Image (cartoon, rainbow, N blue to C red; front, side, top):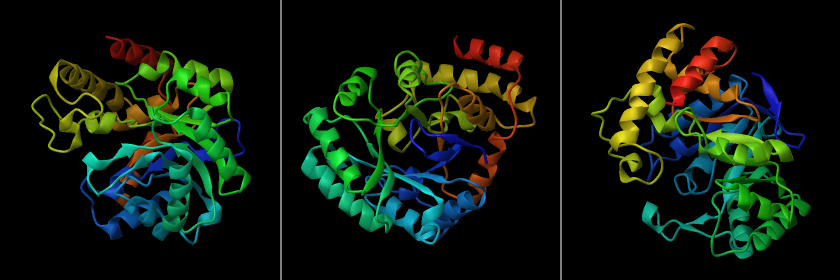
Length: 313
């Protein structure tokens, strides 16, 4: 699989990264079972994926443990990315809180290292900005971890341009992970130009708009999981209906290449300037295999123009 440099680092990541949110299961997703989850991770490795993205809050540690179980004999061949800054008092979505204080980060790194069964993290990311902690405190602690070789590089997730500017006053980071896909393109206004200017790698998550771009849903779909609670994204109302209309039209473009609409969506994303790797979630090996069809081909210049015109409506 094609690999690209991640920001100003020496890390070369596969253009499709394995997103391990789904295998964490509760409280955000249903889980296919540990054996299927491990098989999905191993299939990703076998197909050339070397970038595996997880977080402590994904299943309250479960995702990290499953990544370790699947990859523990392949540690020197993979790039492990996890996060800090979200804590919980009990294993429920309602108890999750932001905490990027030095003490919290120090606790979280040790827990993640234990769960991942490793001595270091390749990319350690602040999951969300913490309004109660200065960016200086957060960055200074991350730099200490880097000096101690517990982490190799620093990344941010869900940070705005102004927040990134503030963080750069206190230390370097190599990547920004944020929501970006055909239907949710707010990142293009400020964050992507800033990252390109500063040489910061862009890692989009939710390349399929949390499932909307799979083409499986219609305007009557009612989501019973977190998508139906207004936490993130648009899964009801006029915006959702507009998304469905676009997905139906995108299917015809995908068929021109003998692909599904979700293959088109991932391919389109990887063609955008500044993208290092796209985080694509999977809970079963067959899904990982299918996602491979998004790479190895290009959308024509004319189709790209027409697709972008459609998305702008």
